Image 1 (cartoon, rainbow, N blue to C red):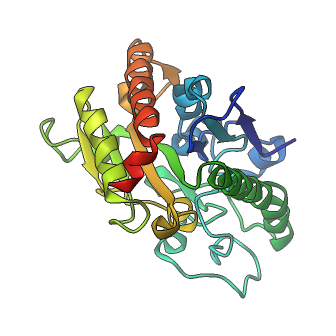
Image 2: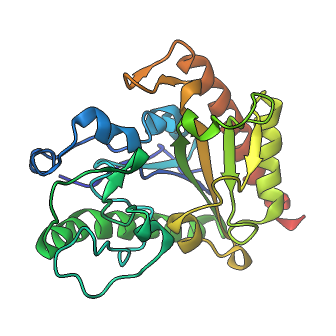
Length: 281
């Protein structure tokens, strides 16, 4: 099985690529047997319905790429060297990053609330198989599409789409909580005018938007961006409670309106950034 799904427009008319690396929901039988958690707990790390929310953009001339396998199986928004010595047996070479220390490496050790996924360590063979069959094919294809789009338009904007649980906002007042968070690695992954345009369009649709707090952008945003050469990337986080029931993983009655507003924003965004003169400002 391919580790990704790609939806292509009849004619690619936009320099914007949409990516959903954490919405995969194909849980391999062998993985479920290895896990000490029920499926409902494993799904807590899933960017539920994000690929569905943004799917209409294909009709607007953009490419959509989405993961097939879940984040707790392989996290595509990590460097492949971010392996966890507390999870992988006999591991000697790894990158000790904050994400790895938190149990959230490329092969996660925990899901939310620090619940351990496995009852015992896994083998390096198991890790290699996941990296080789899921991680590298996904990134090879994403890189290929980005390069192709850049060659067509001399520019490319990657919108890396995610979701955030409402628990992230539990310590904030309603006045201060964000509906959507945009991350540009504190100005390093995207031309500021592009980020501000997207924020303005979202705000005009009534969304409360924060920038870089608490999510500034992950591996994908950093790895595929180079604003000086017209490779731009923005990470987008949608608040899950706006469109789904976070306990049952089902659409909420607000889903259609939420999707309509988001797609309208993207339609306006695509129209503006496709204009050559926008990039001359």
